[in-house]
Image 1 (cartoon, rainbow, N blue to C red):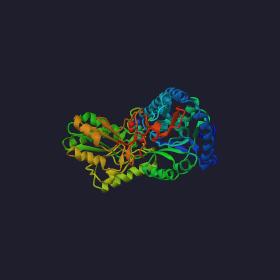
Image 2 (image 1 turned 60 degrees about the vertical axis):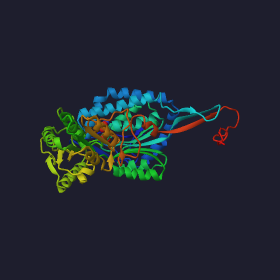
Image 3 (image 1 turned 90 degrees about the vertical axis):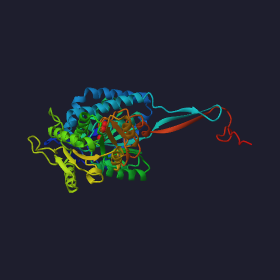
Length: 499
Ligand code: UN1
């Protein structure tokens, strides 16, 4: 079995404790990808020591030159796109079309970051005093701790690390233990693109050991975490106590609202992609379908027909629509929610169990599932499941649909299907989510726009787009007084009170 290493101190090295974990293909557990380091606090200590040296080199590299490294990295990713998609599907299951999209999101992020190297704007504004200039500019912060999930093994690490690097920070990267191979290849490509070796450190391992050591390390002032709201809360408590800058991207319970006047063919395609793409394992998955009375029965019956046609299987095989779940734990969690839905008297219309088909016996497969007659407030309707389970609700008027959408603790994404521009614009204003799509599903974020959610989905920061550059840099202000005399702000330019 192939054995992988950490990348610490500018070299590929084994974990100090000598322990490893196995990474298996969730579509076929007899297929082992390799063994990866089970790192701990001592590995993180070494990574931090080295990253601090890397930071000194990198912070003094001009931002356009840092951008050039990221552009080259984008070029390398373009060349290796299909190969990476294949290894990514092998370790996390989603079909190749989706893993190719995942790599493309990384490529887009690389090119966007490269262009930011020649921008990274501050402001120059007038001073209130004569012969004095006032301006702001950006400085890097230091070593950034990057902790990422399994569902977008390439896109999410690039969302975090490329802007962090462009701003001049060094990174310590811990990919989810389910997708270490993609993390390994990403770091290989970063080095090939010319990133100075000590600027990036790869520490494999589990959240409770390697992840916790990163979050708790006093010399890592910036943390970016994507994962569950429960873990995010713990990370937030620690970072709060330690005065760290923290970006959290957590759960979702995203809804699609379909109005009577909607194009139903479009809405059907949208909900299938939104609910069952990535086997429902997205923070942006559509997990609630809220249908207006007039089209409820027709859309539901057409949806069930289409769901029955979805082909479950190995994401590396042609024709597969839906891959496996990521792990035994996640399979058991989904099964718990099937029980919960039934106890709550929702109607289980299809799915709800593990499939029996040939070729599916060795993986974490679960049938695409629809519950109808779900009512607002049920656990099925309120809690994030992170699997292929869609709850269907009904509504009469827009206000009711907006209230159902908003009455959950999360607020990442929402989607509205209607031809009525007034309803669409009201939805934009009133839905409590970081993103609203009109006539498109709840997934579809583009790399050059800010991504993130409100309420317990996040903590106010955004990934992607222009906003993430604020997160990874400190604003510094410079005043230059060339008047040759002491000018006292707020005093010497005071206009006096009117008589
Ligand atoms: C996530 O669900 O964790 O548009 C991220 C989207 C994807 C990214 C999703 N590009 O939803």
